[in-house]
Image (cartoon, rainbow, N blue to C red; front, top):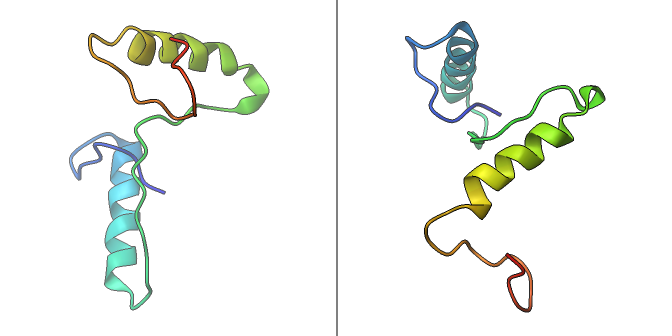
Length: 76
């Protein structure tokens, strides 16, 4: 798994992700590179509050309709 927006001249974290991607591409293995936009930290530190805050900011307050991932009416 990589990270969204990684670049070779980015942070140390981003550089490790790019190096891993480049190494993987140089092998003869079949691969898929995932670059998720949201990855939250240590689950032992109550990151659920951070997740919910971010969800409200980014998804529930969108100025346009958000996708409906379940059957029925959208409760938002």
